[in-house]
Length: 273
Image (tube, rainbow, N blue to C red):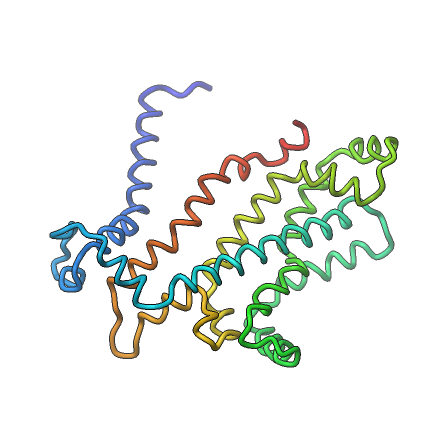
């Protein structure tokens, strides 16, 4: 049924109003980064700053070693994303394409781990990593990612189960072994699913605060999230520097989502294509 021009206009207007409603806090936050401390806490609030200068960003960035924090965040985010993509795709491929005794039971056990909140396993993990001598290093934040995530494995398994068996049968006829079928046939087909998981993991790890707070003690190993929290004191909070670093932190995820959104919405069409 074709939508009338009037109905389409009304829908666009409503969607625009909703978008403005959700974007308003971010716009106000961005404009506040150019204000002075007095303008930021003034009442009634002042929407536009009296002068436009990047000085607040420079002062906030130089107030702490945020260059070091940025490198740590990029290192942790990049390696965990790599680990999740490789390990989850391999496990999901095994659950989706192979038949073996106890497969469904093992998969149910895997899914049941999603019901256990991280707060419950936090202390045992700390004791385990302390036994390994990993406390105050980036290893507790990186190494577990190479053992997969139940949620990501579930997403990839559902994607793989929708792919016809003709692909692997044709590859076996051509003489490909199991690993070649996984790496050369299914990994390219799983591209939309892999990108989706990569984006979800980047957003989770990039903004993670509790994990680095527990396992890191040396300030030289802090991530951006921990560095951002340093602006919040017991009796006062440095509002403008916190807003400046927050704006800097949200730029990479936004750019990543803009680049990857085409592949995220692609769904299972990648297999057919």
